[in-house]
Image (cartoon, rainbow over all chains, first blue to last red; front, top):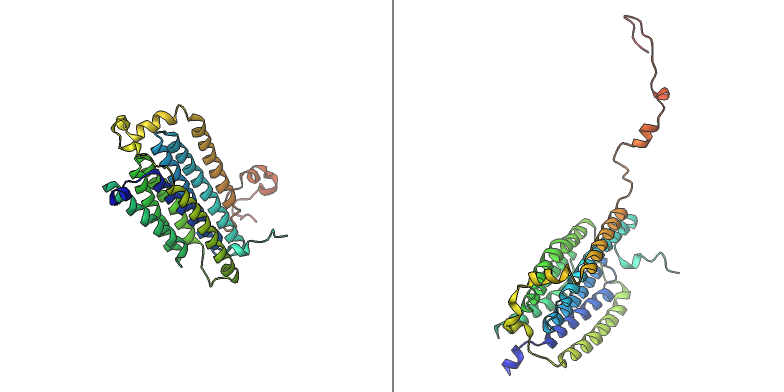
Length: 107
Length: 199
């Protein structure tokens, strides 16, 4: 029983990635006052996707998963840089970093 | 068997620190828990045999992105005030959606037909992971590699253009204005006698 629990199969890694994705999604929905936590939750979701990709790459003996994970890493870094630049600009223009206050385009 | 224990250790601390990122009051503590999560994700990558990606995660994600988060958090006055009434309504909805998604994914994942890991077979380690990635990245995946460079360039330009506004308090040269001035407007030649001062 302990042996079967300790041999880590593909499903374990996918379950870990699934839990992290759900956690990131909860973070994005729940953080209404705090934009930083929303951006960090997006990073957690991208980390979950990376774990998924690398797990499939390792269990399928195909390096394309790891290459894809590197590209996702690149895009995640670029997106968080732009997101933080937007956040800094919004804070500079209106003095508050709460998501609820950024509703100028609300019809 | 030991690698199984390591996986459980890394996975539990990863999920714990990701949860703590969302629950903690101070944003600086949240960013530090995110850094802990990235470290444990690098550990998970190590158990999968992806060594290059594990250390690239540390260098890029922790060393650049998380430090950028720390800069912004320390620069802005991000205060988590008392929870807005909307939070109480969206909190339950968010937890419900998260539990639904997480439950579906975990159930699907645990029912996956598992095969023994390929990384335990000895023939895979003919070259180490970095060299294998290098062999594949610059030949088969050359186009995505170049396009990701373009993505980074556009991100740099975008971030600079967004945050570079007119600085009011800094005096600087306006070269075009300097070149466009007429010397006759600003310089005057006066004839001054010996011993007299100029007016």
